[in-house]
Image 1 (cartoon, protein in one colour):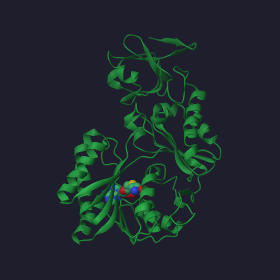
Image 2 (tube, protein in one colour; image 1 turned 135 degrees about the vertical axis):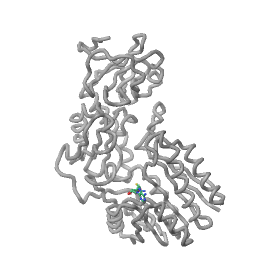
Image 3 (spheres, rainbow, N blue to C red; image 1 turned 60 degrees about the horizontal axis):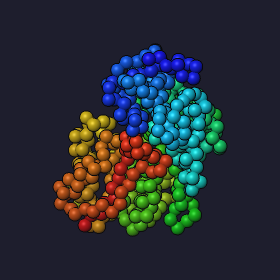
Image 4 (cartoon, rainbow, N blue to C red; image 1 turned 60 degrees about the vertical axis):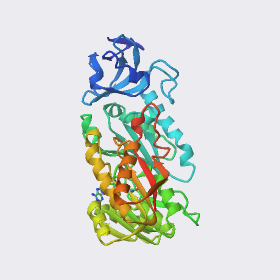
Length: 419
Ligand code: SAH
């Protein structure tokens, strides 16, 4: 089929019988195995019509010939509104459309950005109807990742839309994760709009207990993990601020020490930060200094080895944070990752003093909340401790999860109290 919509020829991706169902439920991915044929000759990132085998138009998406996710949907045909932010069932997908999606996503964060922080995720890919585009705001600087062929196709439009947001001075690109390789794209980093990012960039968050002052975090836009900072752990930082007073705090996988500084500034009696990265620990010293708190002890080590060492020395902690990197990149790695999560949690639970609290996280999207809880339950059993869930944590509101796209959910945390 070679459709003639809006006076221009739009290539079409025709699905195999039955493969339209997930799109009818507004799930935004078309896997390569669902495609029966491609009519026309779309280039990577071009907009294609996605059509059921009976000829029904299902919507418009961005074509990714190199990826297992062959099309990422921009709009869905039929029903009420194509996307919460668009209101239109059918394109065209043009510069105005893409820029409007980006601006609408940013507008949804205005409330958050007006309530005590100048750092928030502005655009969260499919969750905001802009597949492949992540954009994080740090004060006057926006750091974006363009991870798909569709995002790459609209890079200038996205960059202009972000640069046009009020108060934005620099738009910097950090498209250097693994995702681009799966789309056949080279890594790219550097300034997209404005000048160089400020190497001393500091963001502000919340209010410290007992003072009107915010927490201050240095963000290394060019060299830090992801876009420079773990925005997604904002809620956990607030929980640690509430729990830390009078407690000995162990921060495992401490990165740039945000949890450590929050605990130290909220009355923890001691803080030990463990990370295998020397630059991360150096950055943690800087964050402690920025907040005028004691940096505590730092241990540059593999967390598994370090936890065993602490166990062998019978050390005890009243509050532990366990926030490992993504241990399962996909479902095939789940068994191995489950064993690693169990080992870590077992070691951490053993280090809890009576009445101690463990904040334990998994940021592996492939590991669901149920499985994570089961793995942690197994660890508690092996540790011989009675452990209760007293709170649950998840990615915050600027990392939303569409009901039609549960894959957006990746971060889950349990706040556990041991007898
Ligand atoms: N909780 C942190 C984010 C942790 S990111 C925050 O809120 O900022 C995960 C961290 O784990 C990274 O800093 C990485 O350097 C560290 N890491 C990865 N593998 C490790 C290992 N085997 N042992 C210790 N640290 C490790």
